[in-house]
Length: 288
Image (cartoon, rainbow, N blue to C red; front, side, top):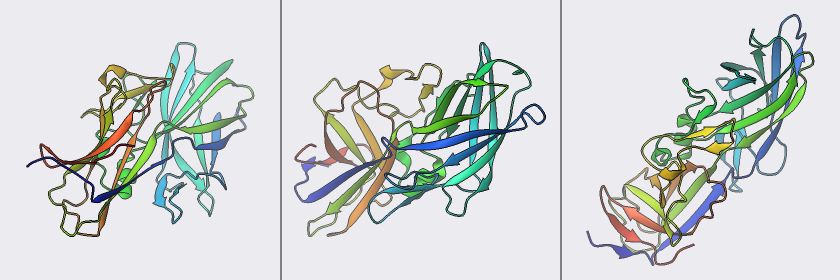
């Protein structure tokens, strides 16, 4: 099919969760007897909101609340010792903004300081190297916000260093490792847009190495170094799957996807392309 431009299509691109934080309290009850940490994770009352159950609000923010099935993957680090564990949610407040997790200290940590990392979402911590967070695989395949939630296509994490075994009372900060993208494509023409399989945001200019975790496999983030690994795999576009292959005249369709930005990489101007199974069938006439 011949490639064409899209003067008839209105495009709205929104980015959520790029710089939101949650403050969490890490408390200990009778550490010498039970050696159990109680992690209380709190959601903010104002500003950009975050939650593990995703829902789009009327004001175009994304709300997050804890759910009864939520689990955190944790990494204890002390010198050369590393141990991965998991904690299920214990108690959730009525508004869903605060949850508690009981965490058992590893038996190998008996004295001194240690560092605790926590991760929610995506593939969790790698089995062979638990310092690596497995990012969402094929994040562009989520065709709705519900898909993003079901697939856990987002990553929240925290790091708390120099925790004293004798008095492990600290405050931790959850951070977003990437951003959630929403593209709204509206067909303002009198005819339908058909055979849409995916849309791509493609870089215009630049070195073509800004789009990370956009290939078929999931990439990783190292908690200890604070770096994304295999950055050489970065490409020049991020993709989004279509929930429907046809956009009727004067109708619109939404695309969702989660992608992490590489540090010190400036995103270029972006153009939008519509794709069928193998070919770009339409391209926006302007870039953003």
